[in-house]
Length: 82
Image 1: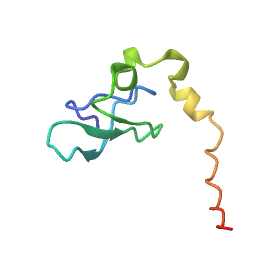
Image 2 (image 1 turned 90 degrees about the vertical axis):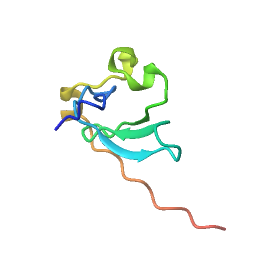
Image 3 (image 1 turned 30 degrees about the horizontal axis):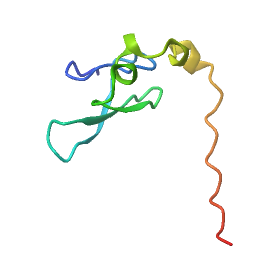
Image 4 (image 1 turned 135 degrees about the vertical axis):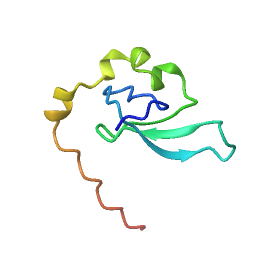
């Protein structure tokens, strides 16, 4: 359920976001994450990173984009120190 005190996702316009972390100094910033596209941002970032209407159009995602996206690649195993 969308929280009216938190903005929707700037990347995919999903209305629900998850609160991930708060700044050590209360009220300075919060880290939010979109549960649909997994975009994360800090609320103190500029509007082009935090507000859908200012987010670059070339990087915006639609529900169709997400439904037709390839699988997210797996993280490769760590290299061994030589």
